[in-house]
Amino acid sequence: MFGLIRLLIGIVILGGMIWCGSTVKLGKRTAFGHVRAIWDSPEGKDARDGVAKKAREVKKDVAELLREDDAAVGSAPRHRPRTPSPDAGL
Image (cartoon, rainbow, N blue to C red; front, top):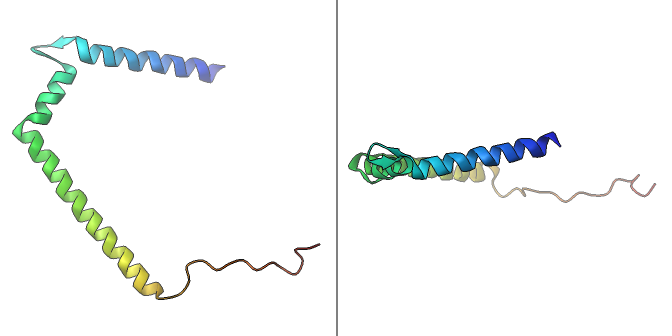
């Protein structure tokens, strides 16, 4: 019962934050309007490009590590089927 009440309170708070963020003016714009203006600015584009570049580098590094792991394992099977133990039928 307490978990349901907490969930409902959380939903009400989240709804209130969404309503305030989209309707209450903070200067010329709402909070969401400010976020969109930052997102569309040259600095925002630069930040997005930097994150995308770093993500590509991480993806490349992970792929390289996986290739090295596959080479280390060689052609050994990754999963061996289980054989039933002699006591399995007892």
